[in-house]
Length: 306
Image 1 (cartoon, helix red, strand yellow):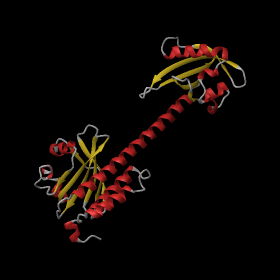
Image 2: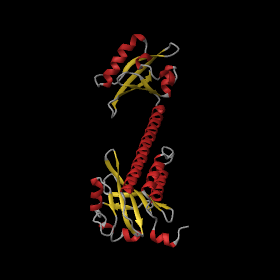
Image 3: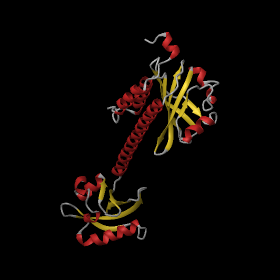
Image 4: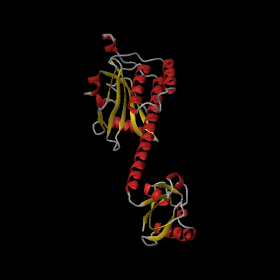
């Protein structure tokens, strides 16, 4: 349990040797890639406060419009409490926001006299008894995304270069955690979109084939395409879409489908699908094309049994 004296004076800043060991320990953390983002930020703030020897360690994210900082995670050493949700607006703190955008760390040994923290003197600093502050901007892909803030409470000690190096290391780990979270979210969203697309095409009464617009290789099919062709999804994937038609029709169908994709042909094409058992099924074919953001072309063919 913390004594009343410790609550008044706060923790003591750690030495350069302790900080170097702390950086090495954090960098070896086995929790990367396994813990949730909330847990990662909780671990990093608690570790930062404990290793550095400060009362408060917090991580703030800049909103997309860059008008506000939102606290994602705050750890208070004396109470061992985690919290989040506080905000800081750019309109009321123009000097602080400008300093963060400048890109360098904010090293403040006395928050009540330093020009970079004068905007906090009337409310934030006395409310939390903050005496010294070290703020390290967090950049992702060269752009400001937030800030890591280390704050002394009660007694005040001058920040050394080792503390700045430590704060930069922690800020880099925060950036890594945010990038990994962003990548994971993109992957999950892509999977959801893929599942939604499959649900839509499987709900269609017509056979649907999704192919590469350049190679003609089939990338996906629905249940109706399996039933129409008499082939499983695994058998269809990777085949050229033209191979589903009788040999004597393949060249003509492939050319007409290409013209459809380019908008130079009618909306429907009469053809036959060659089933796996050798039967020929009359169908009408409609094809639409799309270009993805990375430049890839896709072709969606809809086959309806006549």
